[in-house]
Every structure is written in structure tokens, then in C-alpha cells.
Length: 295
Image (tube, rainbow, N blue to C red; front, side, top):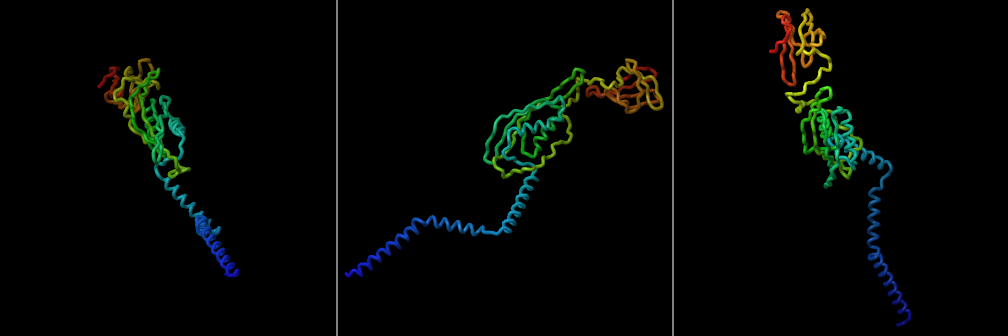
């Protein structure tokens, strides 16, 4: 074999080795990197938009976000995002700010429940309140925009009598409140409007029908029980109480525990209706005898 043939064979072998090495390097060592680069190039080409197109997409996305916020905001209740424990204390203090001096609320934090979609703060509320104040508190908690629910309610009547004899019919209460919140912002509305927290008037079921406590005569009204009829005039009646104080009254005028309901000029008498702690009594004063007669 001549040297020329040998050199040709060697060159062919070297060429084959170079081609084989290049193929192994490209298709084995660089295969994953090439595929990754090709994917990135494809993604970049997919989102390769001009400025005007991007601005149009931004406007459309903002409109969509506003629509979603509007839908969430128009819902009666929302579950807040990352709600602090102090928020419920502030809420109750705000609602109870205008309560009567006889009403007060104690708040106790119990624990936190962790759920799959939301978490719950558990509180216990107890105290004494006027029935209307208690109704306002319960209504505000149940109707609040940020979801809250009441459970385990215990109520009992309570009577407080001031030093001057004025009775106050109150309610002892104790109930548990669950305050809901979430650790993600899927249902979060930043600028929400609170629901109306003012309830409609309701009947006080704890106000006793028959009461032992009679309110004092703070207004200095005529006490019919110790009064006498002095004279009748075309427009009214003159009366005097046990202390010698005189009163000129017309039909419908207010007296202690009741009202003057009728002036009868034919029989020279006046009639009253009194509410003595839930017991309704009619009292008539006659001019001729100057004493009371009860019907």
C-alpha cells in the first residue's frame, strides 16, 4: 500500500471521527439545551407584540378585573383577605358606641379554626344591654359585609332600678361569633361598601307585661290617685292634688301613669285611664262628691 493511499485512509478515518463526535455532542450532550432554547424562542415569538397591541390588552384586562371586582362587591357578603384579630374588636366598639349607658359588651377571643378554603376566628360576646341595643348588635354582626355568624345564644331578663326608682328592663346575653377570613385574595374586594347595619324596630319580648316597678313622677304630672276635681270650664277641668297643686287639663292631656280621656259636663265628672305596671285601670273624679271612684 502506497503512502498516498495510507494518508487518504487516515484522513477519511479522521473525518469520520470528527463527524461522529460532532453528532454525539449535538444530539446527546446538547439535545436538552437545544429543545429548551427552541421552546423559549417559540414562546417569545408567540408574545412578540407591538406596544399598541400590548396597551389594548392591558385595557381589556383592566376592564375584566373591574367587572370581577364589581361582581364581588355587589355580593351581600364577602370573605376578607388576611383579616387581623383586632378588626372584630373595632367593629363591635363602633356598633356599640351609641348604646345607652346601661348597655355594655365584653369580647373574648377564643381560637382560630383553619379550613381548606377559609379560616375562622371564634369570639365570645357577653354583657347586659337594652333590648334595642342588643337587637342592633346582633343585626350588625349578621348583616355585616365581611362575613360573620352568631351561634350558641343565651339570653335572660334583667331589671335595673335607679336610685330615684326608675326601672330599666335589660337583657343578659352571651353568644359566640364566627368571623370568616381567607389567606388568598380570590374573593377579596379592597374598596367595599358596608351593608346597612340599622335594624327595623322590633317588639321587646323581654319587657314584662305585669311590672312590680312603677316609674317615679319625674315630670310633676297630676297624680290622679290623690287628686280632686275643683271645677269644670268649657275648655277643660281644674284639679288639685294632695299637695295643693292645681292643674288645668283638657281631654288627651297626660297625667301620672296615664291620660285624661273624657270630660263629661252632663254628669260633672272626668275620666282617666291609668297603666299601673301593666294593669289598666279607669278612674273617674266627680265634682259633687270630690272623691275618686274606680271602675
